[in-house]
Image (cartoon, rainbow, N blue to C red; front, side, top):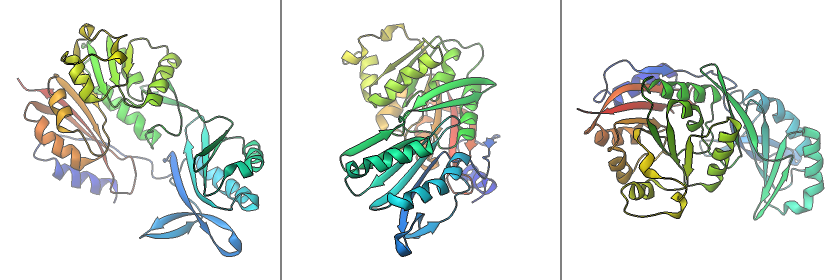
Length: 346
């Protein structure tokens, strides 16, 4: 499905909520995808190829031109090396690329301790970050943290994360999503932001100079560690990260419960004017919707138009949509990401 078809389909989906101009951001058609995960096809003479599932059948592939150029470059080099002495019981290969780094993960159905030396030599040859996994075991060569730089409104923003973090899979579109989010914030507004599902700070870091203070929540301890590191990388000191669920944060703000994880944060100091949410595909549950309805401005980044529509049916009882955007995160697929800016009625 091309971008024009997706736009038409989703404009119709949301026509009852918003009938004004939707901002549309299309993606490059090749070399845009920063994460690629392949199965392994064991063919004749036990030679292996990368494979993907099509109609339930494992199908060998020779190239993957939508992948980042670094991934495309290393795919044949890695495959040749694996075919020499590291193909036995290999069932998966995962690539993760940034502008500055590349990591490769090999997945085995056998004890990887037995091939440690071969893996070490492979990592030395490739000169990239190499991770090998099997049941209960993990070996890391050349490190596993990746560095990234984004260019947002002609400004460099630096990040660090690892393969276990949720990462926007299209760097170009990620930058457009961040820039669009910044456009939803009035220049003369200098209050405080609440961000739910902040991850390693993908949006948070870029928004820091738009607000006096930011309170950002995330349930993953590892993501919080990277978010704090990313503040240091960008010399930012006005963000408070805390590991709480949305329900727990709601209880804390209402003073229904006290949390030890908030002992370093004085919630009474926050004058929150904006809420940013970037939830998983399941969208926002009822308790989160009721919670964020209390705030004047809501910026909602969605990876699932269906659950977004369900959430908007409730949010639009109290808020009005002022901006709407479509982002083509995965070109030539049916997938579409949305951005919605809502402001409280009255």
